[in-house]
Image (cartoon, rainbow, N blue to C red; front, side, top):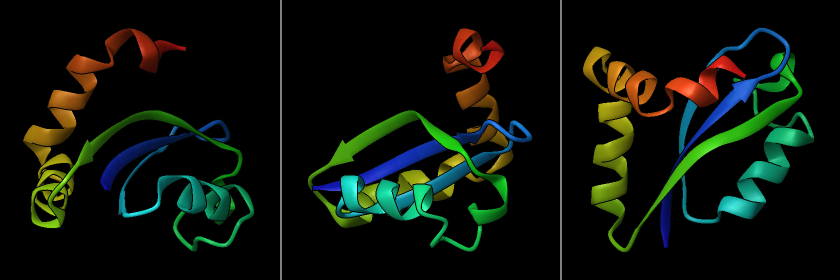
Length: 84
């Protein structure tokens, strides 16, 4: 399986968008501070993830989430979750 996921920093509310083929292992790396992009923003929590059978589909979705349209989509989709 291939995953696209969104993390939220409890420190500064920053959203991180990522891709992996092993979600549990990748989340552990984030929590251990082994991912450069999130290590200064710990702790982080999973807000959302999607699973795909095809790597290209997952990577395309990650690229979309990183666009302005994708960020707006996520803000609308997770409107109540982002308030927490």
